[in-house]
Image (cartoon, rainbow, N blue to C red; front, top):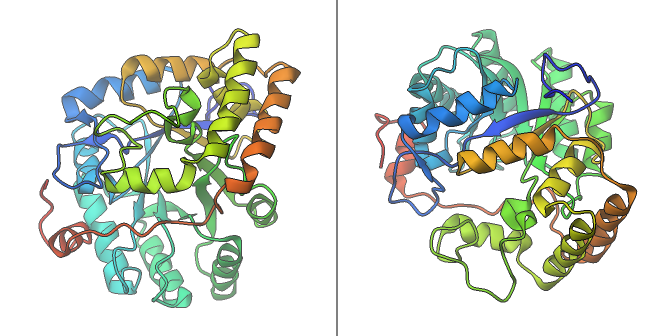
Length: 355
């Protein structure tokens, strides 16, 4: 089975997208998950990803406390399609002036004149959606991006933004990025039908539940400093709020047992579920992140494998029923606070320098 992107022979499978949250430069900010430091270390990841036929890279203004885009600018990305996102740092972040400044800063940092997808990373709340939609359209008319995307918005806001854009002749949102994996399926009953009705693609992040579906974390074991679930970091607190509870780990135990019976790893089972049993289609995507070339190679190989045995699929459904009462709503997004100087820099109001 070949990789699923524009050159894929199997037109029914979701495409694979490389997430770059772990790329960047070392930073003192605890809202950074940088583990692949600098362009020299990041380059082999892009080469490996591209060798499997994949072409889409996902980043954001906020990743690496602003340094992820810097690293990408130093890499040979001409053959890749890059998506970035504007973050709602404070009230007014998505008004015309500030949204434009943030996208222009991303383009400047990426050393490009245009990106494939420009996302609103999460709801801002204070700026009227009509103002934001107009601001996005103005940037689209300047040909600064190809596709307009939304991320972490509730379905009612997706529908409202789509209607505002449609009524005013603005560029329509055609991509949505949200959290989706076998133990976090709250997008299925409400959001995915909404997106299908509006002809909006879905790109799922956290396919491995921030690493829980690798089996390396245990509920009663301490987490090493700096890992994703480190409770002392901003991201660690956010991820623990989403996933770290007794029911989640009971569901994972069900999956570990079934994977062992099928003689495959939990990671492989999860990625094959995402590719073949999640309901995602060719226009949709699965965003994978990594901190090691070995893990990336393993993930790419697993994503190229076929459907799971029915017993494994049933185990995923059983695990979801166990986890469901503790699963968070897909649009829940914990507010992450940045210091004022960082906000000014990240919003394009000051020179972009690594912290």
